[in-house]
Amino acid sequence: MKIAKNISVQRILQQLKADLIGKDSYRGVTLTYAWLANQFGHISLGFIPTFLVYYFLNIEAFKAALYVAAFWFLFELYNFLGPLLSKKESNSDVVFMPKKSKYIFKPKWFNVAFDTFTDVCFFSAGSFLFAFCIYKFNNNIIIIVLAILAIYLLFATRYWYITKMYQFYARFPFQFRLSQWDFSINPSDKLKVENFLAIKNSGNHLLIFGSLSAGKTSLGVGMLNELSIKNNSCLYVSAIKMFSYFFKDEDDMLEAYEIWNWKTANFLMIDDINPSEPIQNALISPTKLVSFIDTLKPENKYNRALLKNKNIIWVLGSKQFLAEKNKDEWKEMLLNIGVEEQKISVINL
Image (cartoon, rainbow, N blue to C red; front, side, top):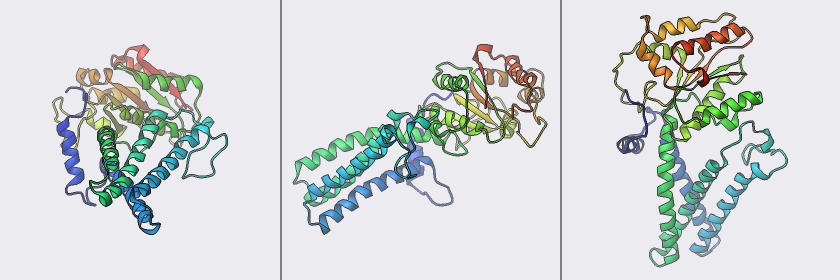
């Protein structure tokens, strides 16, 4: 099966149809549907306040649209610049996050700025849409403003809708950005995380060891989410489910709800391969895992080749009861299936 490179136009239209037609509470809410609903909410938060200012304050519709658009611009600007410029901790969980020195992994400020500016444009579109309803085609400035906003929002909507598809089909257990991760990590391990996120080739493997509540899963999910936002095909899977996937046929087809699976995704995260405290014994050894990879047959080269050439985050148990020897055994397992030693990194949390 080929590695998934991009989401096709046909698949995007299929997703859009599923989000807009026949949506009900039994199907659940996708990230793409939530994003679309959020933007309609932003338009409403521009349209309705402009109507209220126009009607109750008896202000000209064009000026009312300007005032409301300016309000949302200043509000979002404060929200965006707050974490960047504040030298003290914010007492609010609503307006902006604590001071920047608390970030272990810095937020992707350009990405945040793009998102914030897109929100402002949706607010403004709602404001000027109300003004257009009042003036209709009798105000050229409003028509020009709406045309400029429409052109930008078409571009932004395409980007964000596709990005939400990449995030949704990664099957994360929860939504989490790497900048939200606030556990302890030493500088050398932090560098390994950053290097993994920056890789351009394939076949890189990151082993994450740590005790219970050390932040192993959230670190892996945060990393995988950053890669999804860059429009890489990613997949989160629990170890138990992954063990069963090894036994599927080589030419098994994608399910109707899938765009990619573990075989075709660019990046893979396998979670909870071994438990942490209070369980004191490793339930899955490297040897046992290899037997699953080989589907209990000698040298199943198909599964080995897939794993060898894929970028994978392996989440393992506590370093407290996994002795150095055992940690080396996990690395030896990767070497055994053909991974190059220089493409293996180990993190201890």
